[in-house]
Length: 298
Image (cartoon, rainbow, N blue to C red):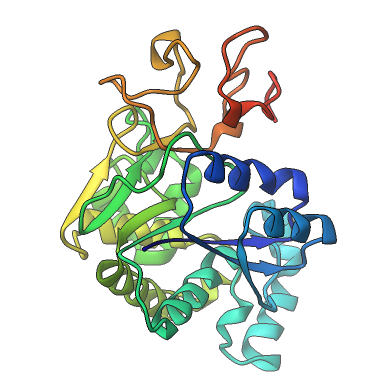
């Protein structure tokens, strides 16, 4: 048995359906568990339609993952009051990007029958083109575009500095970012990863109130090889494709329109497709899993 775990916070039905529809179209018939908070009845209907098990949670954190600096500063007093006075050091005060690892850890720990493999994935910008479990034992993670470096990305540099300090930023600055939005492992390995992530998030609790520092910690763990065995998959060469900053050429698609690796195999998990303008041109062959996609940037 394999298991996919994800979370949805305040997202509309149209934003989440591509994930679930494409997943079931891929042939995956395994267990799917979604942590949900502040979702509409329409969104709940989508989850029921695609046989997702839901776990409701109450988020005490602020929605700041993609907020401007001005909004973060304006929200700081409220976030600090909640996290240190009203609900002292309650991990539910972390933004959902960080809190989700605690919920996932506790859920997996409670299972009597453990899954063989686990995939942790974002929802809003992930599409499945094939069954998403071609993994071997150990931790499997997704590299972002090889042209990018941590130090040249304001977000990645900030997250790494907040999560691990200036020394690690200096040491890892020339490395390519690895994405925390798609992570796979066998159950024992993912439990080790979740323990590592949650313990470090507790140490970085303040920063986790305002920012998605899980990405900084993810890079810190991967490049210091704190989980082994470890496999980092680059774009166009594995089960993950992280499209931010990538250039998609005609050679990257097969005759049916699927995004493919250099060896011609279909990429199972496509992430950040909404960062690419005109991923599919009008009249271009388009697989059923991409029928929702409009030929403009989202």
